[in-house]
Length: 310
Image (cartoon, rainbow, N blue to C red; front, top):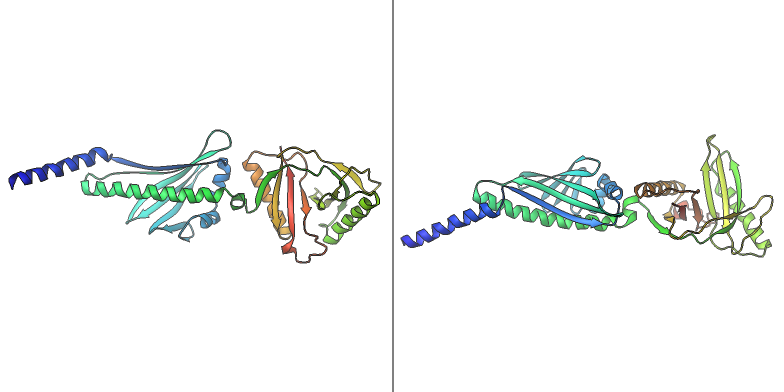
């Protein structure tokens, strides 16, 4: 009996020693995922509470979110990180999500925390198990976040993608108006261009194009164009235009909605360009997929915004 007690005591002692040897005084929990997005795009979502509500699973209440019985609370946001407090079993753990630029146009997203372990071997073991659970949660949540941000629409509110501009020859009418151009005015120009193209025995190569630029005196410069299958010479009102075709050097933003929605899409395109270090050497234009003179419900207008970039 005495020998059994000695063996049991020795086993317990060895277990305690192993716990202190294998479980460090400070436990570091870290999970990293990689994405082909630049840090600015990733940070745009981390800084936007509305985006958190879209990608974070479970329930939410303003700056806090509940997942698997744990409360995640957003704290301080810096240039490259976001602090997250995690309340679990009446204990608060302080973590941070860090976005790190890596080679090329990619970034690493790290979610990490650290905490001191107890000298009580039972609490120490429980803390070790808690750290394992938290790491699994980090992995799941980061995978969820990565899946979300890989869709440009989730970041910018609109689908923005790169393409090659194929319509290089067009005819256009340009004018200046004191008020924002009406649909009636725009389509009066479209009809003039259509008539001219028919007179020249040419064909329209794509949907009408529109650019509206507000000038310093608050007037609006309006240009309406239609791509053609062959170059045309124009006349005293209608002018020929040429655009340079550069592979994958044009952004396309897909829009469904009225002029206010289109304005937001232009802003979204600007955000995309800022995040990716792009600039536009020429004016962007709208492609009027929907005939707005026939579709009176502006919320149903389908428009594509083309922005040449460099």
